[in-house]
Amino acid sequence: MRIVRVETLLSRGPYAKSRHWKRTRKTIHEAVSRCCWPPGSRSFTIYPESGKKRGEGNGVLPIKREFVQHLRDKGWAIEGKAKNALGQHVGDFDAVIAGPDGPIVVEWETGNISSSHRSMNKMLMLLSSGLVAAGTLVIPSRNLYKYLTDRVGNVQEVEPYFPLWKSIPCEIGLLEIVVIEHDRTSYDVPKIPKLTSGRARG
Image (cartoon, rainbow, N blue to C red; front, side, top):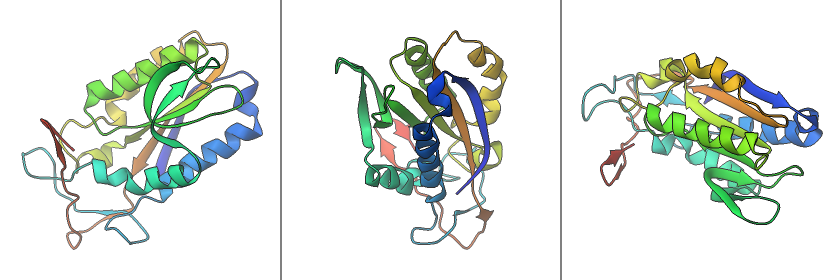
């Protein structure tokens, strides 16, 4: 998997320039690069079928398997709870790690566009309140999105909101969007399975 764009929406305060953030950011980006398909390969090759119709295209949940494993190996809490300085629970995230200025949180988008907005709103609220130090949303590019489950959140649909999110009052905090994309396409690889959880399909 490759990163095709990193959009920094907020970068304020001393932590944004700290070595700790540089190392943490590098770890997040390395975790993205670990994602591969088919399993065991050294790159991410996707079956190029549109996900517009039911039963077609690729699922989304298995994509982040190596991402999650890499962060777990680096000490992140997976599906963890971010806590403030008093140890109070302030939010659930795909991955959380404690930092010198507060929790660093990551959300990997596997839901629809409404889910993307909920993730961003949650991170923005906590950042503006000083309850987390940094937040990252990992989201598919438009080019990857067209091969995935229909209506999965993607950067093209959230980009119109960048000016609004950048204007949120926040004296200290970091917020980035990492845009991901496959390395290549091929009809010789299996489709990524769609997992079912209740009525949600991923």
